[in-house]
Length: 314
Image (tube, rainbow, N blue to C red; front, top):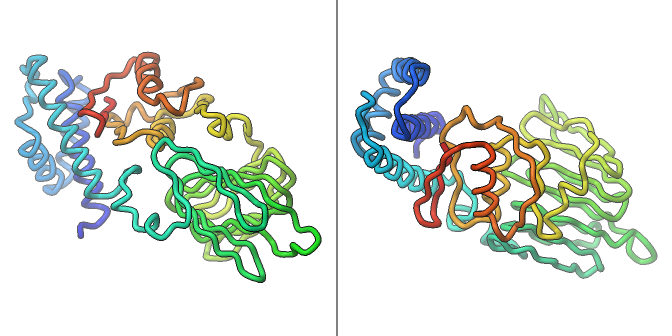
């Protein structure tokens, strides 16, 4: 298996194929490409492989519109194949073995409510997966992927067990009744909508950290440890429960990541200079294509699709 640096190099080469094939490159793009290609012989060979795989690329600016479109199409097809092989996208369950042993899952575009034996419940967002591990000592739920909104039966009467949501090595223990946990690989966000939650995770230097997150706050943990709680736009973050996706001045890279959860296939951002463009709007979870068309028009960016499999934004 190739290492991550090789995968990154191939992805960068694919990006250059798409960027240069999408139209006459600017002098700045030519200069940036020349600098990238000169970084090492491996960079040059990676670009040559991408060019051979997806068609000859005319860097002299002589390509006509039909030729540019063919190169983009070839590049998009190559990106699609690479994404499935490298397993970096959502929506391809065969490359995500964690879903195979989940107790509850949702398909792409599906929002589902599940109820547990103690009276607690969880609303699973599109393409989520979780496992139940209740014992005599605790009520533990493991979020394997995606997003879930929990309404917890309180510790009362015979129910004395704490309610814990485990995700990516950390844990969110309910001190109240309602909160949301979002997992994207090793990155986890906990958003509290009622009362409070204790979040524990591994911090810097491998030391454990624990913090109380209050109502209306969210906290994040990942490879860089546990952040301090911040005020959160709860209505925006939980709008998906009502079938809406709300973006409030979010970067395009984040917007694409969220849209991908509601869409079969994959949206790919080929031009990294667009990643920080800001997006605001309210869209319907069930109509991602219209959301994508509106966003593309507002930002004045271009896109090309290969059926329903992959859409490349450049």
